[in-house]
Image 1: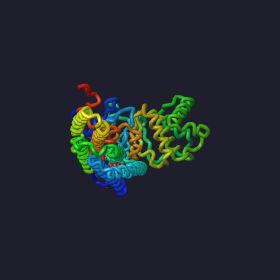
Image 2: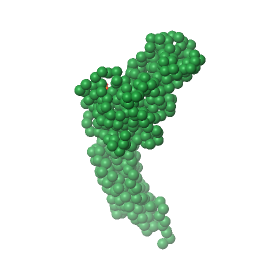
Image 3: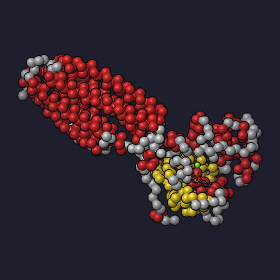
Length: 271
Length: 236
Ligand SMILES: Nc1ncnc2c1ncn2[C@@H]1O[C@H](COP(=O)(O)OP(=O)(O)O)[C@@H](O)[C@H]1O
Ligand SMILES: [Mg+2]
């Protein structure tokens, strides 16, 4: 792909992009649900080892674009994706790409915590097992413990790993889901409003967790809380009616946004 | 700028701006009366200025409280946040301007009736200039007019230049007639107060620019008060 043909969507020139390697490149991506044009000519470079936040009014296409990064949209029959999305330079929509493999590299955490109705241990062990990541039982145990630790849940559950995942509190369940995502060694973690079902303290713990792990992953978080986006991310993308309006350093997006629509949205002026 | 989805948020910001306008009006009035009082050696008017400073102080506290409450309630972003931060800063400058007007008014008592009129004329000129700058900057704030703010900011040079010349003038009077040293010293301090009011006015200008553009003025302003480094050969 020739970079010079890309439509510029950057209103700012994000510093962070210059400092980090680019993990994901989307080029002229369009997503349709039947006739509905949900994402329009979207081009964006997303850096590795940083948190990028997607913000924008409901229905602007944040989840749609997020799902196109691990090809979750493939599961929606009416959904059609055109354009290129590259992870580490490799087009994930190539025919020869193994989607199961891709989803192991690109983990996802949803709005509503959705642990399996199984033990805490099994919730985390499931992924490594089906992907053949663990070489032995001891190895698997090691992966489960370290994933729970990375998700800062281990101390709270270490005495009851055999309890059901669904017996945990909402915040703990969400951290369990993050542990489950981390367990398969993903490179990218997509989070779609991961705190919207949580109370402020549980949300704060997730934010703290994101901050702790961001050095090792490319994280994208969709959030409706402007303050949360401002706190946890280094880059912010503002979507509106299927367009990527503005993408830039979070500090600038929330203090001196360039586009009037961004300004209106973040200051609470959207009608 | 368009309205907030939550109406009462607009009301919060509007009332902050309104309080600041009121405070600015009071500061202007205090300054005008202080200049008048000292020029006419009107001690009654001077006392009114001294007593009137309280109102300005009270408004500063109200603005501070309103600002803190609005930040806590609304978690303002971007221009809205700057609006509040800038209101706090401008109110601090206006409060200082009020203090300087009061301090100038106080000196009316110390200046004798017999002092030649021409001695006061320098202070009056300085005062009028400071007053005009203050009026212009309050106007710029009311209209979010960064261009006008820059004009005021640049013209602080005029105040500085005038101050330097009055400083020399008063020194000359003092050398000519040592009995004038007392009143001239008060006039010198009064004139210095006007120069400082000019500095607060430029602070306000910088804040208006920041409010509108989200960044500081980068231009270098030529300097200015040279009296602190001026040598006078008192024997000549
Ligand atoms: N499965 C679907 N079928 C049809 N339309 C959909 C589907 N999912 C989302 N949409 C539509 O696509 C647009 C973008 O939705 P979505 O990506 O969920 O927005 P967001 O996450 O920003 O709220 C909306 O107009 C929505 O109604
Ligand atoms: Mg969504």
